[in-house]
Length: 542
Ligand code: G16
Image 1 (spheres, helix red, strand yellow):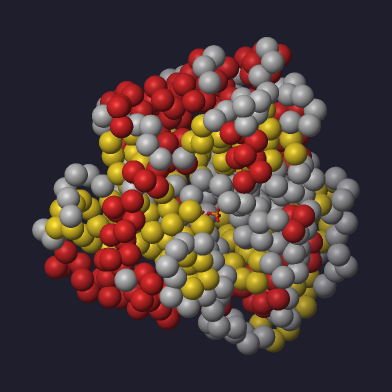
Image 2: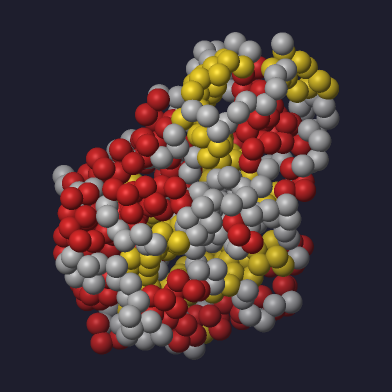
């Protein structure tokens, strides 16, 4: 029943910001995925008879990968492997299922917002028993094991039919195929006032949700159109496709441009929203009003108490370092803690588990709370809806009022995608070397107050994470941040984050790129971007 076959290690199986992401063709090499799954299994202890949750975003290679993980998890001795029907579970739904079942952990198959299809990307990550991405201690152990793995252990069994709900034996284990949506919907109903949101839709409120032919389609259709009474057609691109219809399932202003244009049109819906490949990111655009992810986390933190799940108030807020400091001012006004963590949702897990924070957010379109241990696209949309249903104001009015109360952070991220890794690395090395001399330097009206390579000390487990992004902080409170993405699969992606705080309400109506133009010019001067990458302009501006 158990089959053991020899293997040899593959290079480059080091998990990035969120698991191992590579081109599909890389994963399709014989034994490539198997090696990584074996490394996960070999890193886990005390799994006998335990439950493992398994699902993915339905992208190309999902079904084949699910069967491999089932065979290896059963051989590892897991007692129950809980799989979403069709191999589908959104990332937040997987996190919820792990928590609800008290599972040992979970394996999520996704490359998130990266393109899919045979020429696209695939990914895999391991989540721990709190439902969140494995911390670095565990991903480091998995990586170490990939370097020495020498045998693969499977239960020798035909493929499991994932389209039928029910329990199926695989070796000594039981595979339970579950409805991917049901438990998640129950959780959302516990947090938000569905009657109030239903009344909002009944009053003529119009919405468009673009599921980008990715995993949130079934969730959004069941909840928005089914439970909340939004008009049929509210959810578009609602059927998950292995290649996401040939589109890039990244809900930003480039890849969701049609949605943006709709929101900006005079007769557009009151709210346009989208989520990404695996359902953990969100895009929020009101009629005529784009909400930056950094503003969104601040506005949600300021208003969360209006939703029943957060009526008792929030314990604290956490944001990733490159995220604008808009949420900091909300935390200060509320007298609650704010934490600044490195990029990567895994860094929020300890803070959430310890009850130090309730709401977390990232500039990369991720927002979430302590209801799961992943960011959650549909949750963010529902919290916005509950706030809109309570305040009965437009998104634009809520955003403007927020800026008037707390001030505005003009914020933009410039991505230079798929540049040569050598040039990008040389740029970072050069910047690091420059850091000690930058303090006190003046560039036009800007003076550098401090410059460092961000390091994080986790207040819960005491771990330290260094080299998490180069920060140049100006005396006026503005920031320039340089970081290399940990989620790309081709070459390197340089991210430059530009942040300027403006308190004066008379200055809140400027165009973002214009309001940041001096800082953007300076990013080229200080970083030597063109010299190192050959690029004059970014590939994506968000
Ligand atoms: C992942 C992580 C996020 C991170 C994002 C971007 O999101 O979970 O915490 O902000 O990648 O990371 P990077 O800047 O390194 O590309 P997702 O939605 O891709 O899983």
